[in-house]
Image (tube, helix red, strand yellow):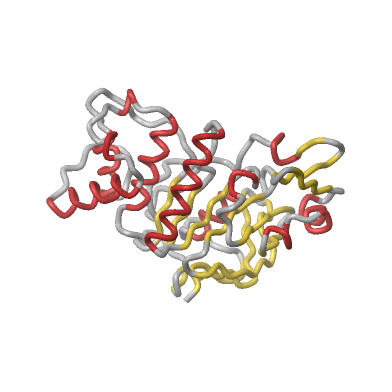
Length: 278
């Protein structure tokens, strides 16, 4: 069974075609990087997998079933955003909020819920953050807590939406290595969106590159080429490989590194495929 299948999918956002007639398959237990220029639809694609953006044409299947809101088998880590942080809200409380299907508030879980939260914290190596106030937790540490939230419910598909934003290279490497280890340890599929490919090199099974309503899915050496990216960007692109890094160039500029604006955030985003990702 594939983790994700798109069949001739068209997605429209604000009257603009984000994807136009895209078909693709993501295998179970596969680690796929999702890349593309600003506005290419990385977040919209994840919202569609969550059942929050219905296709205007075509069909989306997730783990063998039509994409639908509230799928407990799909874990979602949204782009980092401001959160309620009071001295009373600990790292443990923050992760436990996912037990109620949302990321804010202070639920009082039963014993099974407490075990689930402790397990998620252990999986991401964040048990030491459990008792610390959220106000004293750094951005990199908060990313681990958000990832722990996404693991509540033991999903088989993990959607990570730009988790490297605002992190320095050391913390970026840590997040990628953690996601890769979770894929291997838990046997899950991971879709990991980013604005450039280099932090993901070494972790990827394949890459999904979006642009101008189109998509290219394949190995890094198949997709990250001048002809493929020129088609997706709609302008001449050169790909330079140097000392183990890849540079996507246009007019002498590294277009991936220069693009730091991102798809529109998910208002009221919650941890899983539950209503509230409007």
